[in-house]
Image (cartoon, rainbow, N blue to C red; front, side):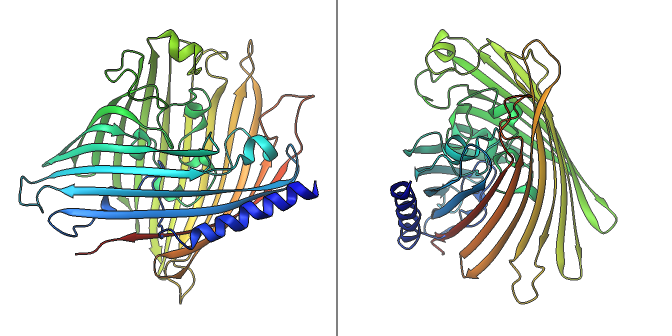
Amino acid sequence: MLRQQHLDRQLFMGSILFCAVITPAWAASSGQSIPEEAHQHWWRGISLVMHGQVEGVSNLSGGISTGTTATGIWKGGLALHTGKAGWWQGGLFVVEGLAADSGNPDGLYVGDLQGVSNLTTPYPHIARLYKAYYRQNLGNYTLRLGLINPNDYFNVTGVAGELFNASYGIYPTITANIPFTPTYPYSSLGVMASASWGGTTVMAGAFGADGVHPYRAPWGSDGMIYYSEIDQSFAIGPGKATLKAGGYYNHISSPYLRQAIGIGVSTSQGGFYGAAEYRWKADQMHWGVFLQGGGAPNAAAVSPVNAYLGAGLRLRHFIQDSPGSTLSLGMDRAWQRQSGSYTGAAESSLEVNFKQPVFKNFYIQPDLQYIVNPGAHGPGSTLPNAFVAMIRLGWHYHLHA
């Protein structure tokens, strides 16, 4: 035990030292990607952005066992704006890579279903080409084609973006039922289009179902996952509301995906999701609230996690001399249906998160989570409620014109 604790301390301290030699970071999208808007013109249409984060995760009580682990991640993106390069208008080429040394807090210590950290990956070490795509704007229309993470655009709740629990970024009705679906740290070859009119945006996309090996069947012959979503924004009182409604359908065409890496146990499954956000400003503070929900109305053997509900609050600029300070509160619940029954146990989590800028492009972000019934187990097999503490350090770097 003492040796293990010593190794845990070494890993955590090594991650802190890793912070000192990589680049700074801002809040990532739900897909943990560098946002497109971060790519500002530097020279002849080229932009370079690098993003680094490290975190320590400690399960203080309950769950499988107490213990500490850590994750460090680096992402680098290179983009070319065709208009700034003197070519055609509205074009953007993006290439992004990532490398991570990741702990396994859920499997080793917490035993939860939803994932206490949105940075951890299924592998201890991973380095890969994360994205490589082309985007073209044509007035109110946008087209993207290439190696894409669908979760950068679909099933995104902006107000929940600072919370660490992975369910706030992409619902467990998708990730828990479709292993290795293309979302962080995976992506896949695909195409998507969007159109906007006033406060309305409509999106649709088709992507390869295999996020682990996106080039094995580049034309989707092994399987495809389809997304569609409609967003509506409008003013209410002193603020702005946004409603989002979408659906997905995953279809597997090859025994390889079912048997070799286990992407689902059925040839097809689908579901729906929605979110509501409201943002307003009062006394120099920026407030935001959100509500999320999703369902997977398939057989229990196909989609054991059949429902999800999340809600929360974000308060930004609440420290007078620190305009970037952010306090976020969240609570979520995932229901796991047992085979042969329409009812099942549920896992709930409560989270409080505080983000504090330290100096330019650098921040520190402590987080506390309380997990009720980790793993959503039924009677007789439950784990003790878990109390998890985390701290994240991050910063970013980008070249300016």
